[in-house]
Image 1 (cartoon, rainbow, N blue to C red):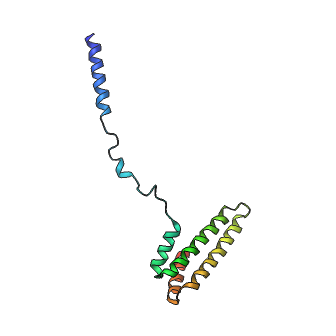
Image 2 (cartoon, rainbow, N blue to C red):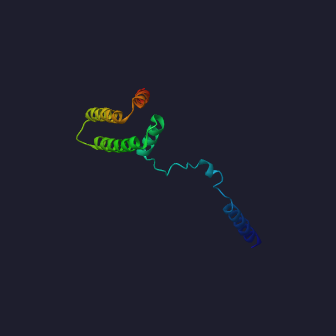
Image 3 (tube, rainbow, N blue to C red):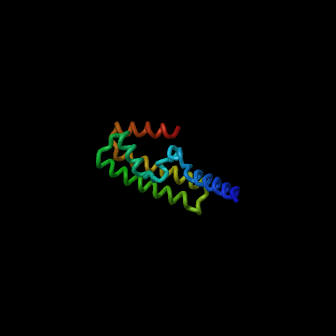
Length: 124
């Protein structure tokens, strides 16, 4: 009887001590804080262009609208089932060229130079 009692006591203490160990130690260092954040591509694009081209408030508002429209049209083209991949690529290229033309209309000459340099960097 003493042996059974002793085994139960040892088993209970083993399970009790095992339950007190925090197995989460170190997991906090691997958490990525950006996983739940949604990135607004329109805002990041506008902020990037604003910074690189020194846009004023009026230009920024127009660029924001152009980027929103361009993103919506791009999404429609990509999700369209009726177009082949080649047609989608051509339509997206055409849309990009139209977007660049519209942006250049509102930029000053020195801003156009900077914008063309940005475009050439992105193409590489």
